[in-house]
Image (cartoon, one colour):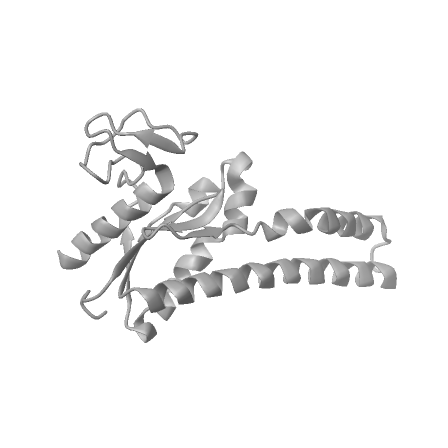
Length: 196
């Protein structure tokens, strides 16, 4: 069993524009490695499709394409390792959203950014690194309204849309940054769940 929460807690709001925002206000940018490499990858894919099946040139082109994909995967993993290591070293409790990544990938407009963010891989890394660092990862349910809830007073804003990056709470007039507010709510909910 994981150690009881007895130190600083940190909440993490995963996003598309930024890979993660912590409850301390730290922003980890989504490096978008695939998006940056996409032109080269598409050129290599066209090169493979033009080669004769079974030919030595096609095998060479396939190898080049595989190397390009591997490079993107390594860059992505490196960013996630740095982020996950920093989080479990910094806090004894890491609160994170339990995202429905498979469902999110069905939204074709967001799928590439979500893939580039590799949310599932980040969660996997946090889960296996936390015990060794004496930390605990607590997943907050995907239906918990972390973005819609005012961190200052608890008011739930039913009008909040995905496009709204900042909002003013009608109950207490607090001006809230959507991602920071969500990360703080995730932290508090994770602390509550850990103590339950």
